[in-house]
Length: 245
Image (cartoon, rainbow, N blue to C red):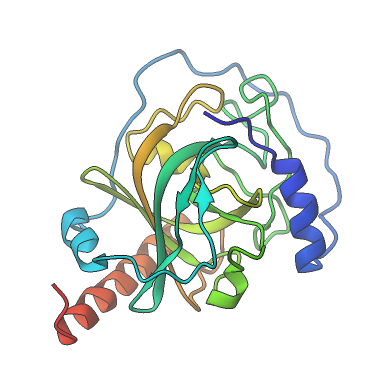
């Protein structure tokens, strides 16, 4: 797994996006000890057929001007693709544990931990990676600018691994040239080891983000599921209507 450079990515992202000033710092309470070791859970919350959705994505219609690597020093072979009002890519999954400090996401559990996230909740607080499934998109660059694709913080996202599906939002910005990262909660729901230091998976994850969508509030996973399921239904119906496989 790569060592994430989230602090650099956030600094670049903030300049690129002219982000608002972060919320006032609050003194966090004591962190409880991490849970006892054990198998990560896989609790898909949706009846979405991952195989059917993946089949409808079909071949990649590339919209990125170049390709991304999954880790520093790895080949740049991951394009950003487009189909039916959504963009998607297939990559690995590294674990983002940034944001609010929790029992599973803190400086003791994550050597790259940062207390901030690129986007904040409706209450102005940083996102909770342990509880909220979210996708990390690369900082805008000459390869691809997510904003030009109608994507922003809170855009509805779907993540698929093997036969599992989890809905989420765009919640973070990662380094330029690297792709394939999601929150602790997203990995856990997909049955991927969510440990920020040693977890993740080397390949096989599909990320789908719907253009011009907005989960409100961004921190509501229930809202992400509701909107995500509706957008997937429209996506599949549109594919059938245009003769998609």
